[in-house]
Amino acid sequence: MKNIIQKVSDAHFESDGDCETTVEIETPTATFYIQTLDGEYRPSLGCLISTAENGEIDQDDYPEIDIVIKAAEQFAESLLDYDNLIDNPNYYNKDTSPYQRRFENDEVEK
Image: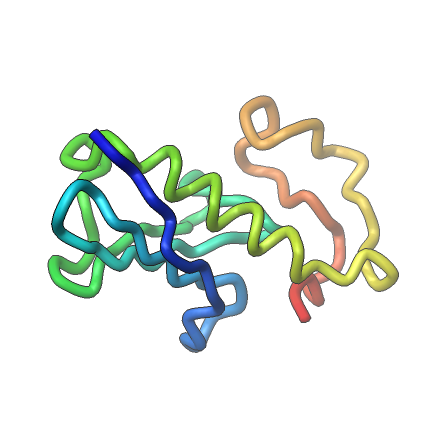
């Protein structure tokens, strides 16, 4: 299976951190909308993944979703303004601290 990330951009939805990721998978093209928080996809904190075609998705139906999530996280990370962020001392990583935000302040994205 061939996975090509065509583009990653800000989805311009109401909440900060929504990324639009367009992926070409073999022949069809799918557009995923991935919510991120503090530059990461955090389903334990309410982040969702949906497609323009099908709405909210079941990740098991998309074997390539890890590639899509990684591209969205890299893009979201590039938007962070580290000069205005305060690290949360209770956060270790998104797997060990699933219910902790990465930064203490709410102003996390440009």
